[in-house]
Length: 74
Image 1 (cartoon, rainbow, N blue to C red):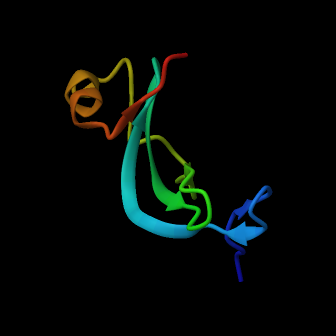
Image 2 (image 1 turned 30 degrees about the vertical axis):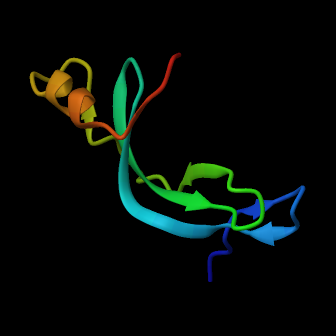
């Protein structure tokens, strides 16, 4: 059984806030799950899929980035 991520300062497990959030980088869009710590409110994305949803050479990449829940500055 997989364990949930842990918030070190709060010593609490994160809980799932939303499944299926999309995170875009300059090269890929990945699907993951949004977790929140009920102690301090910090949110993280974890539970990534094995493959990206789309890569930057694919024609639909820009549409995926526009729909992404989070776009990383990397």
